[in-house]
Length: 201
Image (cartoon, rainbow, N blue to C red; front, side):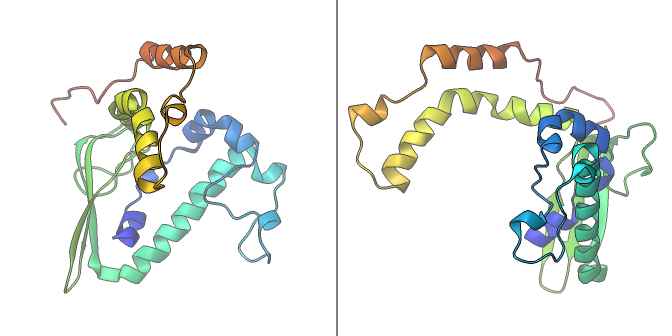
């Protein structure tokens, strides 16, 4: 299942300019979840040296290439068992994919699905989006949980998962109003919203 998830990443929706502008401080600093830096490796195989050529928007471009190469290798191993990518919804103007066949593009709104099938398994993966609308939808879905439930979840992890005893000191640990109110107000003023109603979708 993990391999199918990796193979179904809709890289046509990976917009380098958008990702760089969205997480500019991270890329400018040379931080990446997908690139192996030689400075952190015991050998120099499949790694990059951190420099100006591997920071900034170039790093976002490198990430896309790393993801593309990995996805291609996985799909090659799967062969004909990886059936196809499907999309139902509203295509963005300029998308190389048309109709219901093919992965989603940046700006597409709708439902995307990938299909894998072999002699013993059928796996259907619903693709996540990589655009601003998709990110806003994800934030909107999780906003209430972050504000209302995160504190209780941390206490439960301390008591249940870590098997530690509780006390008034532990349960009383929370952000002071000085820090909590700006966070709540920050969420309040953001215009995040779920996907808009669209007759085509």
